[in-house]
Length: 340
Image 1 (cartoon, one colour):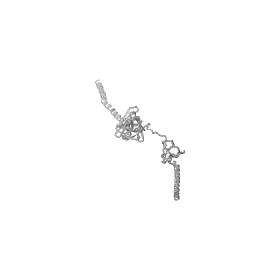
Image 2 (cartoon, rainbow, N blue to C red):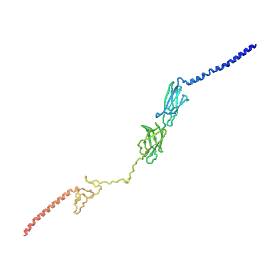
Image 3 (tube, rainbow, N blue to C red):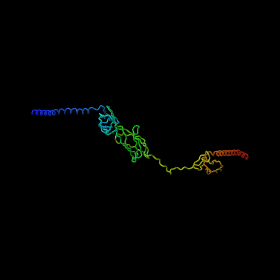
Image 4 (cartoon, rainbow, N blue to C red):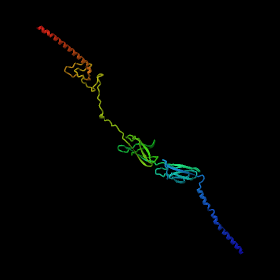
């Protein structure tokens, strides 16, 4: 009886001791493969994963380091955030195939703007390559129209501003004589032209084309000057010349003195002026012939017949006197001889 109890106690002790010695070995074996399996799944990408490789630059072609981009999945959850390196490059790796939303939050430069959001498609096992071009910030333009003499600001002036053959901006000065706007630029220093297309009221158009230079985000002032339109003075009624009527000539071909008054004959002789009607002879001693009242002066050509006639009379009278003288001389000796 006693031996049976001893054996039973020994069997119980062995059974109790067996599980205690084997428990640590059994619990240690499954704990090692668990962390190794999770590490292997994290390091090995899925066989159908894709990626996005990006390059950020500006409009002049220079790289943009420090530009920040977010990649959002189809549910709007952030899938990754990256910043471009010194060459303006970044990569979003290990992306499940699908459509993503790319969002730029910073350009990395005070001279550049960020681009608008865009969709990116990721295909299995393929790297999607993108080039992002950030625009320069617009220049801030202030337009002024001034009087070229006084410098007074003038409303109502309209100008075009552009570069090359393209017009980029049209501005019109308001009541204060100024206007403002944003001018897109394509480089760090861009040259522009400005041309006035409408002048302020009462002023001449400013015809020359001016040029100026503007940079990204920088303010620039453009000024056009206008000269007042010249106006002709109104005529003074008191300065209007008075025109005197001109008398018409009494007969064709005879010049008129233009005064309507009779003038003495230009011949200077005692012979009266010839006329179409008979005129009484001028008494001897009156050397100034008078023209009939209301008639115009006559030229010396009208006295030619009178001169010819007078000369003929004088020649005839002279011949008669000479003849009488010769006869008197002839008769005188005869008388003397008879008396003796």
